[in-house]
Length: 235
Image 1 (cartoon, one colour):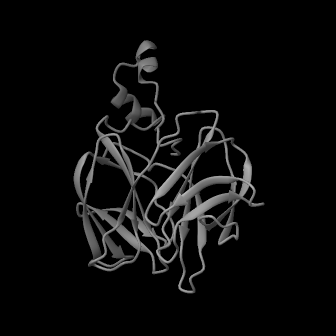
Image 2 (spheres, rainbow, N blue to C red):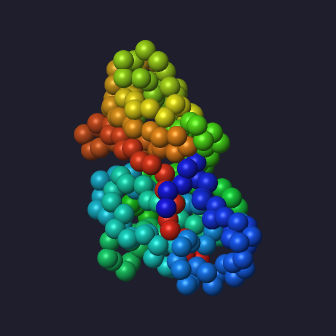
């Protein structure tokens, strides 16, 4: 299920009641027309491992939630209850955790948890995500996860227009833009020489993430994705 600005779809419960379906749970089980809404006190958390190590399985409070998350790929947003949770990363298919961290998440908030490396003593980067409040625009968020690079600017491909400026490592910056296809570059702050180029094809009301990450040869890479929320079944 896609999320637009991290706002999940409303399944028209009131409308169903008006046409005579009073037991919403029973209707879901019988017809499977739609999934239940996440509880009002839910929070939303996604994981990304910003290095080139192998895929990982993600466990939350001892329960596997994500399988074989590829390096450099952002997961869907998991629906979690507000409060404290333990996030553990396992090498795919392995029982022992490579690292774990305790995470406090607030009701109604969305959080990107980025692990720079898979080392037991390395704390993740915690970046709060914004929502898209304009259905006519697209929301673009850039995440700076390249520890070997200083602050960066995001510019149009010709270098003439600054889109976002001075994004520090471990931080993000967002902007609402027209839903068009655009080529962007990341450059050192104050410079116009591209460290990496990326192209986005955006649609109205959607939220997009660009993750800037490093490689062993110090070359920056960019990964673009449309924000999504996991399918919530109520279990």
